[in-house]
Length: 281
Image 1 (cartoon, rainbow, N blue to C red):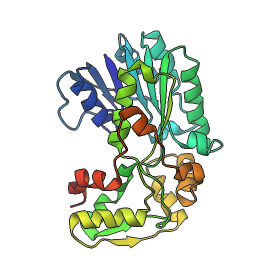
Image 2: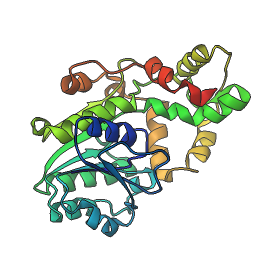
Image 3: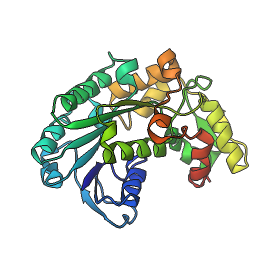
């Protein structure tokens, strides 16, 4: 049995589906009830990683764990590393951690230091492990969905500064491969899309898919942080804005790791839009 945390999100949902399709028994864990029926061979459990002890019963008897941290769990005071100890105590053999590219490219950021501590705890646990370090997510564009639907407007800072955003389904498929195949154990995989794309260009791709014009508005960095901290800790907002305002060479690099694991190149942003365009209508 494989436990998937964050199972109703942009990565966890396709991961749960991929594992079920591969014939694995899956326990899908999320803070809230599943918004859609879960596939066959999947059971859903509501639990909160902010209270790790509540996961002990869920982890009992599991062979593998996918560990995904929501925004607030990137804060330095989070106790999410305790989950790794609970996994080992419950008999879990393999853990795949969704980390962040910034652990390597911005190691001194407060949220990156916290994530590095989780990575280190996993390496020292005695378990089989793999670490996934994605860059920016294509699905971050869903933050524009309401404004596109109602006002045909996208608001994003640093509109002409791009990074190679990665499709969450690619992350999910890499995670599934690492959970199911021990050959990937001990690997650290940097996951990016196939091309650098700016927010302005992303808005153009969405507009083309909708067949309607979409205006682009560029707020200041301060305005963007105020909006971002409605959903994530200030430390994570600062670290994210540092990257998207001035990505360094490592953050602009197109990684070969999606193809290395899956045997195919990563999906481009327009592929993600084609699958999700109804969110913007």
